Each structure stands twice: as C-alpha cells, then as structure tokens.
Image 1 (cartoon, rainbow, N blue to C red):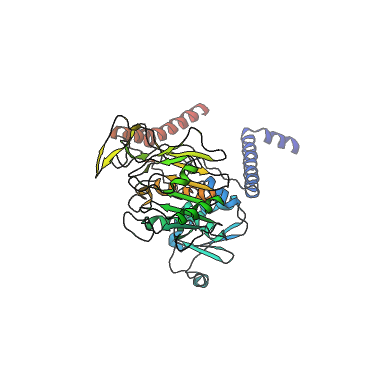
Image 2 (tube, helix red, strand yellow):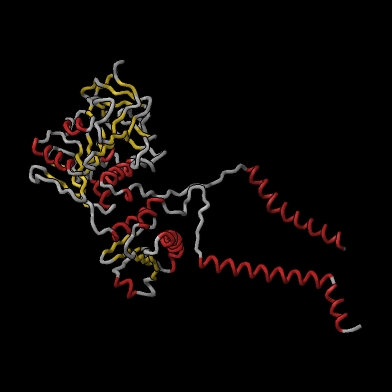
Length: 451
C-alpha cells in the first residue's frame, strides 16, 4: 500500500473525520468571536433590555449632553474597597460617554495617587469631581439626577435668577418652618439657579434677562407701582410663577383678567387625598404639558386649594392658555367656609376643577398660575414623590429651560420572588436532582446505543 493510500485510508476513519470537524468548528468559532470583538470595539453600542430601562439615562439627560459645547471631565476618587461603587458609576458614565464625546472620565485611588487627591482637595473616598473650564463641582452620589445636575452646573456659563417677591407677607425662602419655602430654595439651587428675594418698592424694575419671578401667596395687597412693574416685566417677555391660597387676597387680578382668568373664592374638597384630608386634594392624572409629561402615575398633594375660573368661552387672541392641574371627578368647590368650618351646597361646582394654568402671551412671556402655595412649602414639598419635580418643572418651563425639566431619579425595582414551601420543594427536586439525573440517563442511553 502506497503512502498516499495510507493517508486516504486514515482520513476515511470516523474518528479522524469527527476530529477534523471538531477542529474546524473550533477554529470557526474562535474566528467569529475575534471578529465580533473587533466590531464591538470599533462600533460600540449598548442595549438596555430591562423592563424599566434601569441602566439607561433619560431623554432629558441626553438632550443636555447633546448641547454640550465644551469638554466635561469627571474624576472619581475610590480606593480598592469601593470597587463595587466604582463599577456602578463607570457603568453609568459609559452611557454618558456614548451620547457625547465632550464627556470624559477617569478614576483615581487616593491611596496610590495622593498627589492628585491633594490637588483636587479630596478628603473622603467616593467623591466625584466635575470640571469644565474654570468651573468645578463635587458630588458624593452616583444617581443620574446628581450626575446630570453637576454637568449642568459646570457647563452652564449663564445662570438663571429666581426672584421671590417680598414685602406683602409672602412665604419666606429663608426658614425651615413648615409654612416656609426653605426647601424650595435648596431645590432650585441644586439645579444651578440663583434664588434671591426682591422687594418691588425698593427695586422698581425687574431684570429681564435670565430671570423668573415667583409670587408666593401675598397676604397684603401690592401697591399700584409694584403691579405696574410686574406688568411691564411681562409685557417685555418676562417669566413668572404665581401662587395663591384660599382666603388670601387675589393677587394680580388685572393681569389674570388680561389672560382671561379669574381667582375664585372657594375651597376644593376632594375625597381623593393622599393624606386622608379632603381639603388636601391629590392629583394623580395630569393634562399633557411639558411640565407634567414625566409625572404620570406620581401623586402631588395640595392644601387649601382655590380654583381658577375663565372669563369667557375663548381666551384672548394671541394667548395660549392651557390647563395644568385638575382635581378629581369626586371633588367639589365649597363656597361656604369660615373659621375652619366648611359646608357644601347643591350650587357648588363639581369636579373636575381646574386650579392650575400655563399662559404664553404674544410678547413671549411665560406664566404659571396655581391656586395653592402649600404644595411647595417645607411641610408638603417632600410629602409625595411629585411635589418637588412639579414645582421645579414649573420654574424650568417658565424660564424656557426645558432641559431642566424632570431629570428623574431611577428608583430601584424590587424583584423579590416569594414562593411557598411546596414550590420550593418542586424547584429543589427538579433542579438539584431532576436535571442532573436527566443528563445522566441521557448519557447512559447514548452510550448504550453506540455500544
């Protein structure tokens, strides 16, 4: 038998054929894996297949990142014991980097690189530094809201000022009292806004550029000169949030009439309350608007609410007036109340009742009016999930800074599975005993057939 015949006979052997096929499949598999990794490196794409998109950044954050015009450097300071936290942050920052090439990040171990830690004035582990140009911001959290907020702070060159009108016993912004607005001030400052009081008697004019005026339930009437200053501000395209409670004097009634609206002297009673009090109605469903579009399913709670009526079937020409907040179908606007005693009458208007509007004027002014101020006080702001984002969205919309609207905080999804003892036994016997036994019997059957 010649040498070539021996080779041919050897190749015809079943073992050789199987071995050759296995080798070819192995080589092909390795080639596919190498090619796939090359493509993954060159064309990086991430997919979030979770039901709640827990590992994806929000559309609002993407819009902010797409508008970045200068580099933002992020430095995380973690030591070896914080590897899990560093991994979580890095996973999230990859999403930011994938949206904008202006974002870069790196991590520094303060123990191994104390020079960099000292230069950045880092004293605690888990600190994250954001730098852009001469701006610098430090946070100690890794939620999307905190990261996006820090990026906004270091990348924004012009800051918006929010002026709270004073001098008429409005709600103060510098107190922790339950009826004050100290928490609101912190909320807005966290969005890189400057919050200041303004007295229109002392300051006869309101700065127009990058400002929002907040009138928070004045208990004393404004002087004609003050109302004229506010009217001039709005006529030039100013922005305002106007809040008023039941029993309070109707503020800026002439401006309200100009928009086709009027404050009503009533008190909303609503059995749909999150705090078990009919005078504290809760809103669970919102008319669609840029302010509330991301608040679906989240409750906001109000207190001592007055409704807002319309003066005609149609709003004045050139004005865009849209409902923002409505009470439930089970509500009623009581008009007989005094000294804490409330009585309803057959003539009282039934729900749903509108107590919040957005207005856009021909002069491009933006105004939000709400028949309640308590929902933003220290005592109510954090009662429910939606109160804080609702107000910050009002200010952001009025300021025409839609990128600030509702950068949500991703809540962890609880996926615990509770099973009975019988179900646990089924899982144990089927997985721990059944599957291995099935594989064993299959192997014995295959061996017996080939034997």
